[in-house]
Image (tube, rainbow, N blue to C red; front, side, top):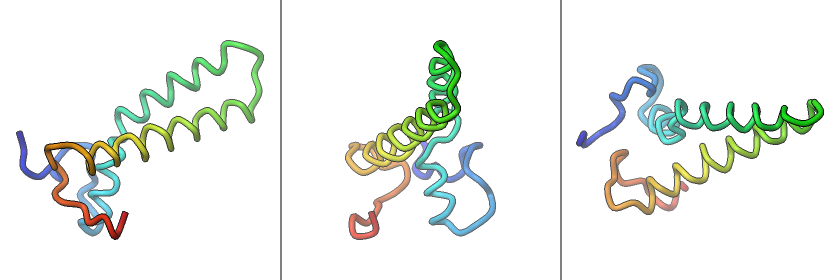
Length: 88
């Protein structure tokens, strides 16, 4: 297992380390796939733009931000290093 995951393919090579870690914490490939599946499922009924946007935003915030950030903070392994709780 890698000690530092800032070299993963989905983490941008530009920007400060804090920016790269923040983008990496979202784990955008997985978050995007799940958000697309949720959007696809929201289209099964009658099409409403507001519902589609709301479901995509909810899944992005719930999975991309909350779940991955909590996993990085509360998990036993710290692939992103120690995150200061004061900054969270």
